[in-house]
Structure formats: C-alpha cells, structure tokens
Length: 201
Image 1 (cartoon, rainbow, N blue to C red):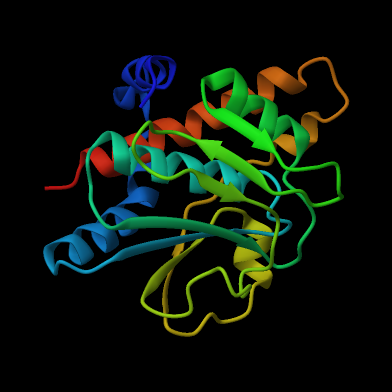
Image 2: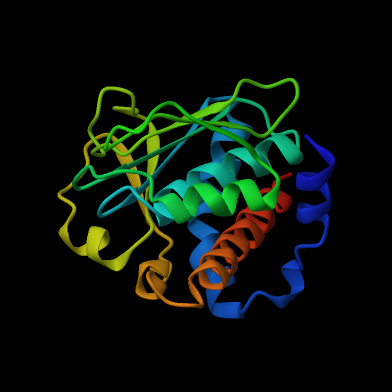
C-alpha cells in the first residue's frame, strides 16, 4: 500500500464513531468473522440505487481495509438497482486520497481501474446492476448502502442481507461544498470499514 493511503488510514479515528453506527456495523462484522472462522471466501457486495457513489466508496474502502489488516480471501463488489456511471467526484475523491486511478475512456459508463496496493491486483469499477455477471450469485453478503435500495431492491437469493446505509453526497452536487462533502462521506465510510476489519480475530 502506498504511503499516502497508509497515512490516511492511520489517521482515521475509530473512537469517534457513534454507538448507533457501531450497532449497524455489527452484522457485517459477524458475517465476515463467521466466513473467516470457517476458512471460506468472503464476498461482500455493496448495493445502492445507481451504483455511482456510496456503493463504490464502500467497495473500495472495504477491499482496501481487508488488505491493510491482511484479511485473506476477501473480494468486494458493487451494484445497483439500475446502472449509470461512477460519478466523477467519486473518482476525484479517490485520487485526492492517494489511490492511483485510470479511467479507460470518455464513454458514458467507463471502466475505472483503481490501484490500492503495490502487490495486489487493482480494482475495476464501473456502474452495473446488482445481478450483473461480474457480481457474486451465492454465499455473499448483500450490503445495502442506501435506504432507497434497501426498501426497493427485491429479495436477493443465496445472500445474507445487511443494511449499512449512508447519506448521499449527491445532495452537494453543483455547490461550493461538493468536494468537501464527498471527502467527508469517503472518510466516514473509510473509518467504518477500518473499524469492521479491526474487530476481526
């Protein structure tokens, strides 16, 4: 992991997390711990409405924290109830944090290659529905990252459904506070994913 990312993660203060957030994270911790104890692959599928903002933040930070804490056999995915694109400010937020990012082209839904480790393969991000072929079909956690997806996403078979929801930074789009709001949401998700993986035994 590069120095910028390592320093960012070290500075995340888990002690500042509110008790109600810790309660919401408990089912995700228990799912990962059970898979780890059983020596099974750990598949985490983060789902939001448009697969453009929160679900990608969760996917990237969960995968990064798995690497940071050296938790093996973790693969993180994301999807939506509809496909759009990875929002540009999400990409910029990753770059600012220290990830190495390459956007494939200027198509409406480009492939985003994100490097978080010098030795592990990069993540490949693009917007897709939760049932896209690249996403898992069984034995995974379906983590709902927004209230809308939690309410409107149909039953997902062969999955453990978990709700860990976040406020949408989209509300700041087009304002002077946009970059600050996206950075804050990214930092919140990073801190909570750090907490999740720090609890594993």
